Amino acid sequence: MNWAMRDAIDNTRKEPFWWPSQQATSQVSYGLTPDQLAGYLTKANNGDVRELQALYREMIEKDATLASLVYTRKLAVSSMPMEFIPIIEGDESLDTAIQIAECEKMRDQLSQSKIQEPNAFEFSTWYELIMGLLDAIPKGYAVYELGYEQDAAGFWTPLTARFVDQASFRFGGVDNLRPFEIRMITENSLFPGEELPPRVYVTAYNKNNTGYPARAGYLRAALFMYLFKNMGLKSFAAYVEKYGIPPVIIETDVQNQKAIRDMQEAIKNFGEDMALVVPKGSQPAFPTPQRGTSFPQEHIIDLVNKEYAKLILGQSATTEQAPGKLGTSSEQAELRYDIMAADATSLETVINSQIVRPFMELNHGECKVKLSIVAEQPEDMKTKAETFKILAEIKAIPEAFIDEEFNIPQPGEGDAVTSLHKKDTALFGKRA
Image 1: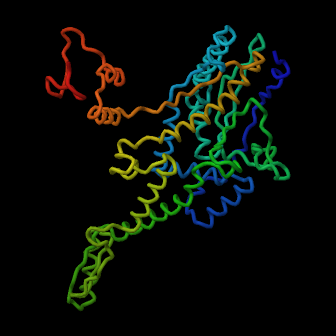
Image 2 (image 1 turned 30 degrees about the vertical axis):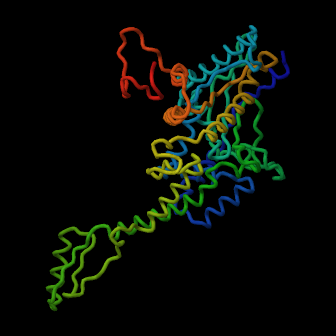
Image 3 (image 1 turned 180 degrees about the vertical axis):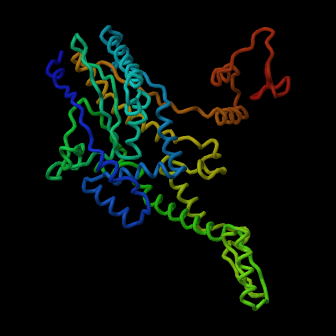
């Protein structure tokens, strides 16, 4: 047993300095301009990611389409079947079975500990831990703090998992020459921050794009799209506020100023936001789109939503709501399989390398198990049936093979059957 490693757990909780990470970065998206956004990116490139991470959070809070797509991608992976299995396939040893049982117990304890904690919202269940680690994909990185407990026999077990906001960190050491080093901003160390002790903190990164972690995360590619969409929404809202309610227009040829003022007072009593008294024959014109056309802002918003979908899901049929090249919108409301499999592999690697392996090595000296996420691509049965129908026109296909491929059970004696084809003709040929 690796006793040196058993004594290496630093269970002293580090409290992030919330003032710079939360209050100073609140509402960074308010009145966002291109110059402000460029400033946030420049700071992030130099290691100060607080404002950029706060902006990521507010983007998801304020943009319904973006939030829906981000959650769709995370839920696609978190809903996959997950189980602890031996690292070596076919290993049925007692030690391996014990380790699998301990990992399953650890998973259950993480979920139960949230109920026992007074500040339950701060702690995460196993499922919430999975969802939180997947936050690294849109935002570049995600950090969790594990709370270990040592029993009377000296065995360590992670009982709590606490999410630490991305805005609580910076990248780079004292000399700022280590851009891959993540450090927590605390009250005792605003700069360069404190190092994270091993095995206590789980740090997930988005490594789909190689390079500087502060520049990772697909939301970075959505920043200027979000900015332009937000500007389009603001200008559209300003137009609706000014011209959305039809104005009350009174045409008159009365020249008496007192009579005109009386008319104006009468209009005010209607409570209309826009009302005019104009000389007869000089009705003003208000800017409106021509019949059959739309506002330019609508095109900007639609374009940005399509770009969001391509960036996050790998296709845009979800936001187009119409048949597209990849299929109808209902068929393409899911994440593309290759992206989903890559996210699952990334999550698998983080959990196995930073939770399962240290946990097992602390208590057993070696790790014989791993978490397996089954990322199976659902089969398109409709396309498969159409393929069989085409093949049946040029080649005889045994019915038993078709039943096996589509998992169709054989009817028993006296069982009612449903059939849409002629009595003496099967879908793929004549029956015997």
